[in-house]
Length: 105
Image 1 (cartoon, helix red, strand yellow):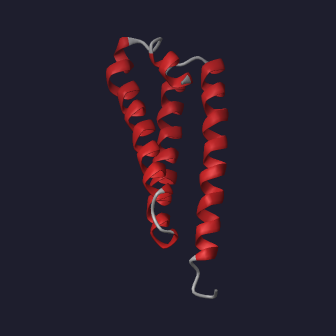
Image 2: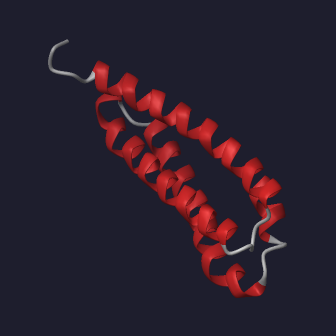
Image 3: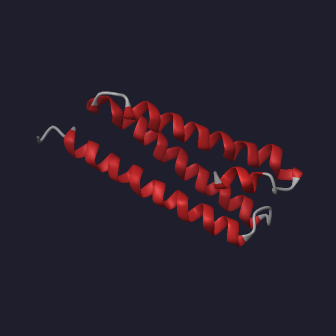
């Protein structure tokens, strides 16, 4: 995982605070997506929404890490690109679930 490699290079001032927090958000996003994937269709949306919300916070925390120069631009761009791809996938899943669960159907 790219993040784990980058986590090792973060200065100590942020490694055990912001870095650890980012690490936890990655785990929480994985948990929310994994939970949603095993639920019946009508129960998935709340977990997908949690994953989206946590992904948004993760983006902000990574931006703070980058702005404080604890993460260089190249690493920030590499992570942001992957996180944006994940965001598009989860966002698409959310849209599909909203359509399928809409009362108009």
